[in-house]
Length: 193
Image (tube, rainbow, N blue to C red):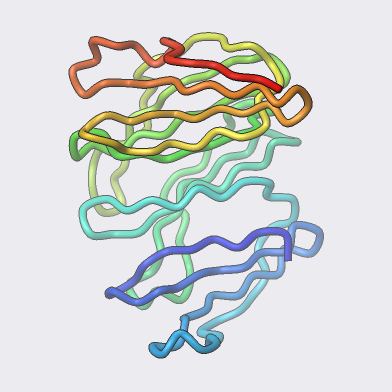
């Protein structure tokens, strides 16, 4: 398996696993006692998806599937039974995005997309409900290239984005405040080896 994607369904821990080379997928439920899991469904999707970004909105679970080699992007909704997904939007975002990081800011769903080769970065906003979701760009800029890890952490109503470059050991924290008085590109602190 190349991907393990966790999600919650009816207060149960669920996940799906995906194998990029074959497209094989399996939806699973973690047993109530936390000991093992059971397969709920399995099948085959298209090959080559490189990123899955799960998120919840208005009581529903969704995920973005992205293929960085070709730029294909799908927005899928987890089925009511939690045993599969159905595509509600398809498009092309261009090749090479290396990170998709979801976060909630003041009750609104956003995600950060970063292109490690060019440094392009944007924050997109997800609006709507049910099968009518819209993704719109909220902010964009350019960071340096080569960030290998980007993790959003919520704290006191703000979202802190922690960035790390594995090659150099450089780390920094970038913050976006609820009031937007601190733009996403503001570096709060950096450190290195």
